[in-house]
Image 1 (cartoon, rainbow, N blue to C red):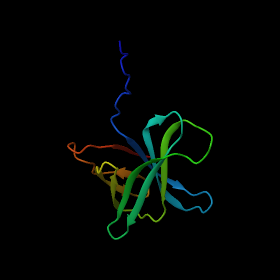
Image 2: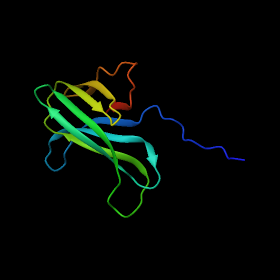
Image 3: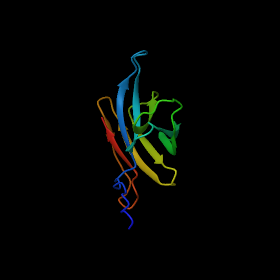
Image 4: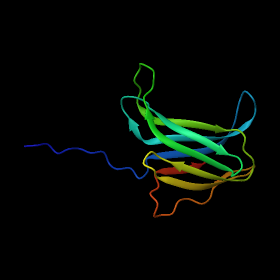
Length: 138
């Protein structure tokens, strides 16, 4: 008799992204922090998300291409989610197009409005498009 195979429950999103305005303590300069995390927690290692980030100033477009995960170089094991942080220093108070793609060739497109007082997420992907990332602003 075979035992029933246990499978983890399927998550609604693969990644989460928290966008916030921060200040660099050393330089005193403001920046926008893009903090990527996996929704899945890893027991053995705390992996890193491999992301290629590009900024096209002419189009006001930020692109993040999620390549996958990489194991840490340290010898101690530590559990937790995988993460990646990007600090965007050269921002202005205006609208930016945010393009995020993953290694499965899925693309999600968002609008990010930057003002003195807040960050506001505008247009998000259609319901038909498979959203693989949940974005929040702070």
